[in-house]
Image (cartoon, rainbow, N blue to C red; front, side):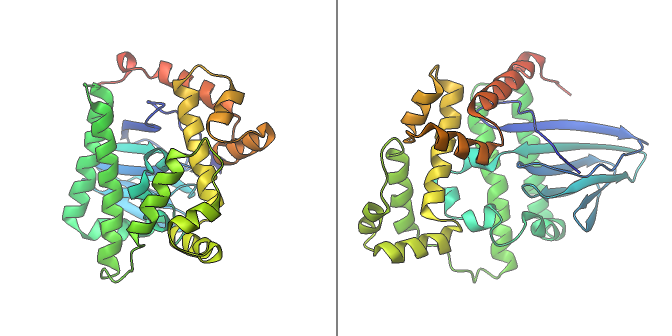
Length: 298
């Protein structure tokens, strides 16, 4: 089993989507995993995929979701010829406040996202919507028309919505949703003050909760502590700055509110498994190699 590194076709969107064709091709069945979510959409033929202990057989129109860091392998080509799309994207790149409200589900606190594959298989309309979104992302990524970034972002949100709506149907919409009014102002405040010192005491007063109650409330609702959430947002902003600004790493660390460089490097490596310099070099190199002019059109 190996940790696969996904070469993004767009450094800002943190996404890769490709079309594959296999004709009577023997497969090595190599187990692998990656931090990105993976979606498959079968356009022609049949394919078997194994996700941990579960084997899925996908025919034309079939879709599959593999969760972050979940071991999986392409098991066998069932038909003589199969054509399918694979989509990988880093969920962190699309985690705005509306997404963070459903952190427990989308970040797999309550269980792997692959548990929704049965729902995708049994609900034709849901399967069609997912296939249409994946196809739309593929088309936009390889045509690169004006506004493609916006269109791709909308399609990704459609995929995430499919997951959330599947959960609602599966549980009879009995699950209590987190109180959005309290959390939205917290998310907005953190986003505006990432370069400053953020005190949980200030946040708890803002939400009319005691310090200890807010701490427990936030972790129970979101699935991670408030400090962890702030650190994730700081690193996400640092990722964007590394790609969009010509600045020293020390300056970027200060802009995201981390003055201790040792702590900054530790956090960055924890969430990206590489240093800030390696991250920027890898993404900009991949972006150059996979520029619109060199993108496949099939």
